[in-house]
Image (tube, rainbow, N blue to C red; front, top):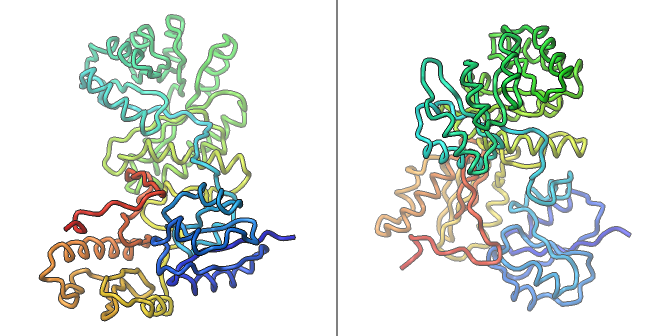
Length: 459
């Protein structure tokens, strides 16, 4: 027999919930219980337990995503699982669709080397500070970028300080002497080494990242690989990813060929030639690159975030490697797994139809303003007024809040958020910040408690 689900909802969402479930034609049986409050946010555990019989003919209960309360307490009371549905009721079909991670995505295959590009000009204290920040963003190895014609007199002390703080360290230099100094000070990795300076490996124990002797020369890289394999030396091989229109597609072919010829070696890829040298939001670039990394089982990437448009590249790469790993393990597309890289737009922006907004307004009996982004623009309404516009300034004269500074400020903030959501194709949810994926710090919210009053709500 198919599963039976009890959906709890408020007055404003009841009709929409009925329509959505009917259109889904689900395999499960269901029942809808309108609990007697206008909106889901007003539900509480006590209201639910008072208004719902303890004995329920259901296999599980689904409450609205915005419900604030203790699900475990309700599950114990009804003796069946109680869970939250999606925040937006229109996403209910997705909720019952593809498998999603049970918890936060944590597993990955590829290590992240995060480069501090101007380490030679930084104090040790500053380098440690940056390294801690990079580690929090997802870095596994801190890469010290050495600069041509710039002395790195404190290289040894820097490496020792990083190692004392628990970091894995790589030294990135075109100068063989600096590589030897770094390796002898305890660096775990050195990059880059090629046929011409391969002899330095006789003096050090660090794991090298080896590259072609000249751009695009895969044969020289393969000769180096064979020598290292004969000597049973651990290494990473990097054919070098080139910028667009400077050998980009050919460089991808080198990675493909290298993996095909050497299925078991560790391969390394630097992503900065694409992220830093392309005028594009970096999230999509990093997602695509990590898809390639996942397909080719590339073992480590070097990430830089120098340009302003790449300031979140480490976070993006970290999110992308976890999404791609989950996709690969579950043999499915990297689609509807996690929204961390959906910063600028939603896959399916939630927009209320005119009919839905008219239904919601018909329940409103007070003068508090509700704001929705609809198919026709930004809708703001209460029991007396209903306006539809785009620019927040176009609403002001008609809202009659000129003598209420805190209310005017609040509406200005909310309408500005709604305008951004409308323009970019993002979701808008009144009283909540817009979601920007890894580009913004997510505030932890307890769904067991009511939200605190904002400054404009305090008397």
